[in-house]
Image 1 (cartoon, helix red, strand yellow):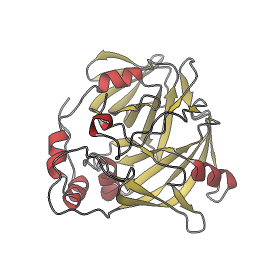
Image 2 (image 1 turned 60 degrees about the horizontal axis):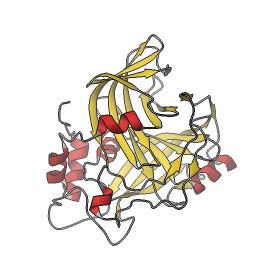
Image 3 (image 1 turned 135 degrees about the vertical axis):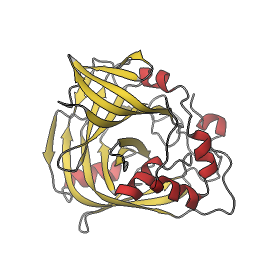
Length: 307
């Protein structure tokens, strides 16, 4: 797998946050991405439709949900989200184990499913994931239905206010979509329905700023906010902007750092919402593991690292 190539939007934010050195060190990081992908019980994909909107698709069930006939290819049995070759961003995640990996490339329909020809594959840290588990079961493609809904609808407000888990789809200047996990304590997402504005804090991460840089460069974004209890979700799409608010004097030397604050704010993401969709059956219902410790920036670095 070739090293990550950072575009101007990502480089600009890396320089603002003084993490260019860290990002360069991580450019060829893959880690146990194939192991994490094979063990994921949820895959979240994003494609950029002809209408200009990033749409989110899911595949969930008992692992493994994928087959890996080659190092740069994944087979997705039963996953039929596209009818022609399409640039696709993906995230393989297991919230109960705090494991996740980016899986980006070209999604092609094949007999009985799809194959993903990988151009980007790498592992991410364990921070900010609310632990949850899903019942065992066969692979299930979501959503079962997608329907327009008003941003001020009580359903939207309820899902956003209670959410600890969401997924951010963004678009690189190359046209390659990307999907990232965004998690935090209930209430970390803020929705102003009167102004059609969605916002949230971007907590300190690994210093690459892959999603934030995409938003800075193209402004395209979609946020999938999931209701784990019902398996439904809300998809909010529009035009975004990222502002870096955390400054430091010198270059950051390490990707993962222990902080006093479990949720140190690096920046702020805002989205002017153009529309909202209610996704029924976006994933199977999941049970929150209340007693499981959540990994945050206050955790030891050894706990933050992929494992």
